[in-house]
Length: 388
Ligand SMILES: Cc1cc2nc3c(=O)[nH]c(=O)nc-3n(C[C@H](O)[C@H](O)[C@H](O)COP(=O)(O)OP(=O)(O)OC[C@H]3O[C@@H](n4cnc5c(N)ncnc54)[C@H](O)[C@@H]3O)c2cc1C
Image (tube, rainbow, N blue to C red; front, side, top):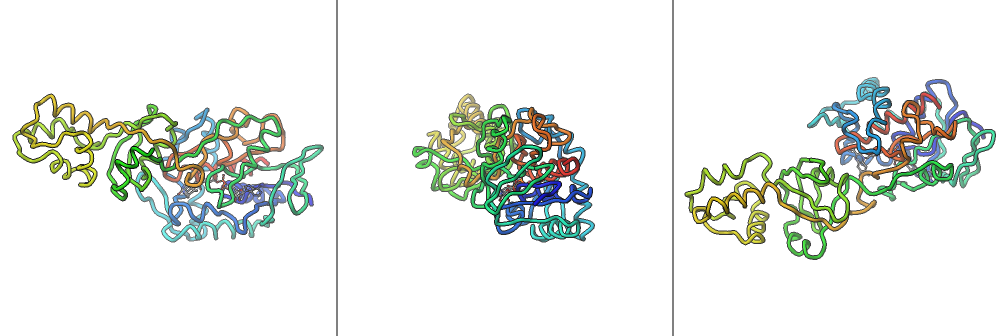
């Protein structure tokens, strides 16, 4: 079978790419080995789909070249996606920090994408595994159900995270096959785990959560931090995981909204135990454990000024070293991917292979938590669909 455009991957970026290419009058086939389209869209945002963010800018993305995403983000903005939702009367709202969620469920977004692709005559071949790509006078996509020829092929196969939802490394394999560099890959937006020693110290705090600020490799993140059975999770940790490398300490500000030195000074004559005082600011179980491990529990009035200064400093800069990440099984995204220097930022076409495009998470562009990854998938997919 021959098509103008064959898209490998029916995730967010592949589908939006198909819609734009078909709108331009191109004949389009989307191939995916899953039973249905958009598996990750369905589960994203806890089923509510945090599909974009009003404050999107290149500063929200990690990449060897942070400027690479600018052009695509400008060509397809959050408002372009909400216009599509408006056309189908799908409700959405801003939660916090510009994060846009469906008011219903992520199934609403999937329905819009299905209706649009069907209206525009996009063909799908689901339950079809792509094995590879051959190139002579045109491109040939090789699958377990035969091969498809196309003038343009778009690789929208995503990253390695959540293999249960269809993730494979095919996109990276295809890139390397054509001599296109792939940067180092690692799990991102992922919980961090403890070694045996820290697990012994903190595992029984599972469920305790507190707002923190974290600095890791010079990147500052904030949000809540959650103790889990084997480590740490919560938005602040997921965000920090984008910078964290094995061997790194997290510098955690446990009381980001207070100056603890001033707070202690104002109460210096009090007979309250430090652990009880801290329990008014931190989850009680954690406050008691922290004080126990620091071996500093006594009435506040017994501390000298210097000691309180040191305790305040440790509360604002508590060092904790995770041992590993939860891996691709638990990672929302893959950090790294097809090297941006190999692609045109305006079209997503490979510079060395005319007719071959990459979009979405398979590229070395990773968004922060908060709708930025889906926005990147929409923007890069649209751009490829506009040129393929
Ligand atoms: C649990 C979870 C929650 C998330 N929540 C959010 C959120 O709320 N907001 C946000 O912005 N981002 C979120 N993300 C990230 C976001 O979902 C992804 O970044 C985005 O979906 C990537 O889109 P994509 O089209 O590039 O890749 P994908 O959506 O991964 O699509 C790739 C497609 O390629 C197919 N494929 C792979 N290999 C083959 C092959 N060999 N043959 C045929 N088909 C193949 C796969 O089946 C898949 O359908 C979340 C991710 C996870 C895992």
